[in-house]
Image (cartoon, rainbow, N blue to C red; front, side, top):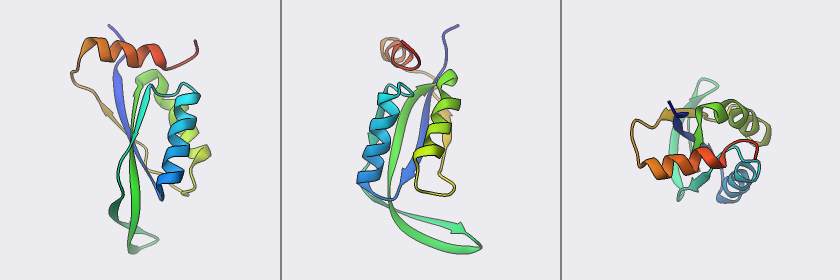
Length: 108
């Protein structure tokens, strides 16, 4: 059975940081592709206080084997004390695209 593809979500406080993070992730072959969204407003509880900030979201295409090194890189490179790192399994998708993701992640 082929390795499963994942969509990993994280946020960044600015487009600049999001794009820098995306570039490092792809350059390190931790993901095949990273989409950086338009700015959005996030509401969350932090230090027992309700907060609201502008952020961008990154949608990262990787694999189950690539998840642990990707998560470590996000923690290393991110400006947040506790960055969002959520992995969603891809239930189904185009086989050729999934093969491309798998071919781009990991050592070559």
